[in-house]
Image (tube, rainbow, N blue to C red; front, side):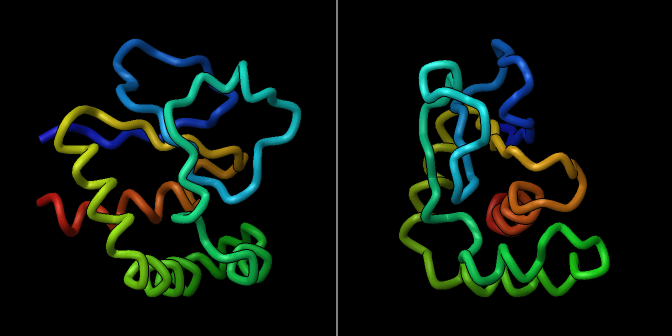
Length: 118
């Protein structure tokens, strides 16, 4: 099975990134679309604006955020199937702009997808 990697969009691309997918709803600050070096922007799979604003990257809210985000993803199964098909074809790297590398929507999305992959 191919790998799902996580990387800040500001980090340099690697040859083994595979398909580079931005999974944030908002475009990253200070980055031009030309320099982003991405293959796909899946803003429709990002958390809703309401959930994103409520979470506000508060580590205390991480468990609830993850559960609520999973519930949102459950309503987007067509997009999930499409993304899983991409992962079957090659490695993918989920790109995110958040400074918090441990508790962000890219981490949660990877966790969500791993239940289908294993």
